Length: 362
Image (cartoon, rainbow, N blue to C red; front, top):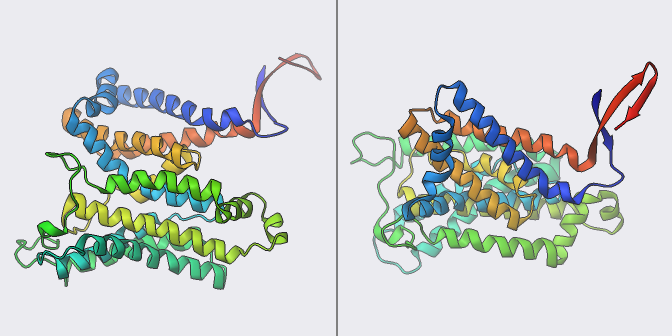
């Protein structure tokens, strides 16, 4: 008796949406086993991971706060992947958005200008666009694949951030800590819920869902994006400009990641430090695929990933587990999602051997 995978005549639409659910269930089972191996009570650990962060208003607002950069980055990544344009370096564009927006805050903050916040947000978008434009140029001019260039530039951006906070932007009154000075009050994003850290950046993230859906499903550009990704030969025959699609997807993706970066700094941290992200740009790749590259699905996937970040912090405090547990859980989720996605194009079949040379299909 053995289990075989047989090709389907056409992809199973039901499995397209059921596979993320299956991956989440398998991840919970895997996490339970992991906690048991680590000598922790699995029930208590799961409660801390999934229930405790949702039990208070502070927890719910922190969930929205952490989901904001994930949602913005993931929607941009999904738009690109639908056209077979792979932006793996949203983390770098996130960082450049934070840097560009911070420059505006440091140079014009404190003067009470009404245009300061809009200028910071636009600068953040510009930073992400500039950083994504480099891989777009390399892809369209020299055929350098964007997977490599976007990923490598992510590490360059981290080095640039380190140089700035250790050097020219270092706060002279910061007791030698590598950080910029705190933003002035007029350079911080308005809070949505009094007494919490949830800011208007969450509204921008929510707005990206209907706008992303509208772009992909109701516009000519969205049709071109889907056609280039699903049927490149048909796109060429129709005269669609592949290079223009590459530029558009990378710049939109970079702009959204840059917006996420400045929102994270101006809404939460209030200053640049050597580490401004726990890996939102990379985690957003998982979020995009968990949400089936659909902005609505990505919204729910971003909330789940944000819950894992919050729960992971709770595990550090209450059960003295390392922060690496969060990354391990994310890795499990991606692994099981990729495994479950096999069922979209293949169906399992149990085969029972009755005698030598004969096989019965169950």
